[in-house]
Amino acid sequence: MEKRQVGRTGLMIETLGLGGAPLGGNFVDLEYGQAVELIQAALDAGIGYFDTAPWYGFGRSERVMGDTLRGNGHVLSDKVGRLLKPGAVSNPMDFGMVDPLPFNVVYDYSYDGIMRAFEDNLQRLGLERIDILLVHDIGAFQHGEENERHFRDLAHSGYRAMDELRKTGQVKAIGLGVNENQVCIDALGIGEWDVFLLAGRYTLLEQTALDTLFPACRKAGTTIICGGPFNSGILAGRDMWNYARAPDEVINRARALSAVADEFSVPLAAAALQFPLGNDIVTSVIPGPRDKTELQQIVDWFSTPISRNVSTTLRQWLLDFRLGFLRLVLVG
Image (tube, rainbow, N blue to C red; front, side, top):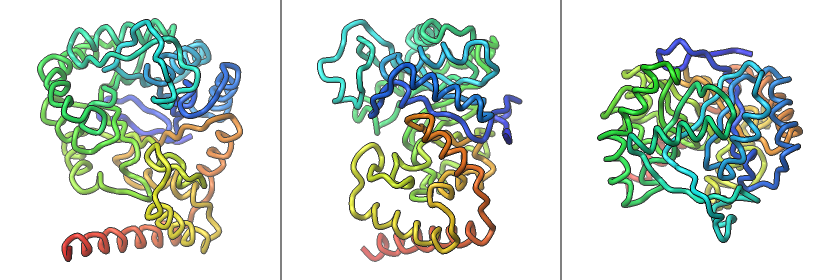
């Protein structure tokens, strides 16, 4: 499987990785044994890059991923910014969690919080290293007005912890794992980052990252890992978009894209999965399959031949849509 470099680090990862949110029971009832089968199937398929976080099942994803990857060659990204404290939440489905571990979350983006989170992650994983360390879900999308305080903690001391872990060789690369463009742009102003794991902002449905973020990243030598290439499922035949039920406007846009793909007998999901990698700033795409059957389907989509004609037609449709939207905004 093809590999690309993470930032300027020399670290190489597969262009197709495995997102670990479903392994923690996020929006899906996945038992431990099924999670093990899914990770093993990914390894058997030649996938060597895996992503997880304490947030996914409040530690469940990290535990099963560490157990299964231990002793196997792999590259792993994990996240900091949330500490897990004892005490189960009263209604885990408020957070989209099915049967999480009995913890609750405390946000801490300070030096001490990030160092504590890093050590806790290693303990839950049962592994001696994390290759890519990402600051998780900082930004207004997650925190609203509280983000000013959290970002100040990151700027004043949290970044120093991330940089220290990189300089001492405890991690090979550092970055953010977020759902929004602006906080990545803000982060470029406080330090040198190797990679941003950006979910949902550079897909067949949305390319807002092209406007300002990607040029800024290219100048800084920061690469992108694309999470959520199916925009929560709408581009893979489901009715979810950005972690909620898709509105009619988005459904209609997905249908229009599907009609273009159908003209060339290409599954829309295959086009969606391969689309981000057409931009050389994108290092990897990491969908989050819910079981090994979905993983095999993703591997098939990833290897589906897509001709230049299909790519050109889809890109033109996207360009026309972006220009049409811009005209709408300008006209008012």
